[in-house]
Length: 135
Figure 1 (cartoon, helix red, strand yellow):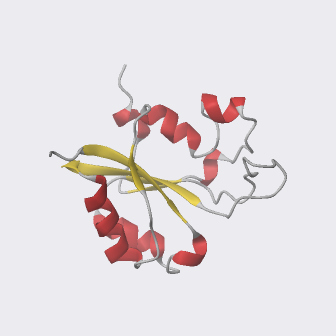
Figure 2: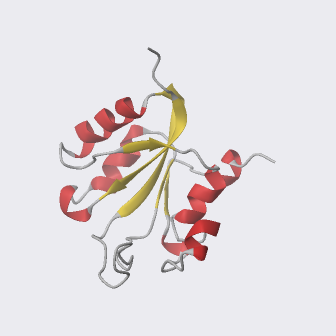
């Protein structure tokens, strides 16, 4: 059975599960990556009162189509076994995923999620959202 392959992926990183130099390590991979500001003001979907565990959203652009599992293994080798759990293929548009880094995507706005500053997005290896938006 063929496994799904893609070039655009997203995953979460939790500050307590990654090394101090994690951004430099990610840069060494050499692929375009966009990292959200630290999401530390997200409210729980259950009660809307308590805060979710602080995390970063990451967009990863592979050079060629690969499986989510291969991306997960690469990140675990780089940042440690406990650094990453789930890697997902970007199913919605890259533009929407990029806007979600700061909760400016349509669904995040509708859910009244806390908005983060786009100035706090970290771009590695020449990540340029305009390259991934198709007209």
